[in-house]
Length: 211
Image (cartoon, rainbow, N blue to C red; front, side):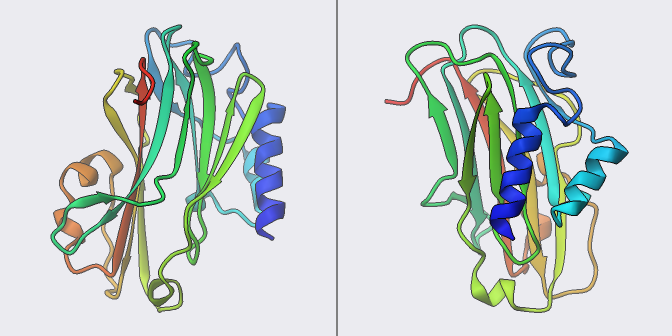
């Protein structure tokens, strides 16, 4: 099932079925300056994802627009420690870079089931990549928990070298949940104190290559 979902999402990203796709006409590209923009799904597109077993709450999609100086894109996964500090996951998540300019516009999607890690689908310049986060800890994936997710839902400016929070997800053994916000809760993760497991994803665009 995971392979089937991944294949359909890749087809949606690369085939231009999702709204705003392509080198022209994308939401992010029609706005002035460099920015990251959440892409909205039409009813038909949501139905297509439903055929792959993906619910809207398990899927986030972003378009980005930069300039001709883009050299590196890094999507980082963090795990929240008991001391409420974000620690980069050993496996990282995804990075693409080049000494020559990367395509200045593209899109990527994060999908994640309640009992699994997130999968990244990345598309730019007609090419696509896939990256999978490690599985969730077994004690979390198999336990009866309440799951809270908050994503970046607003268009935000891209500044080279500055990290943009994309998504936070927390697993709790308590019934009450809050309205989560990726940007706010990444800066101040105090509301996650006592939760079983909390992770976050960010993206950084850069005009330099890693050393």
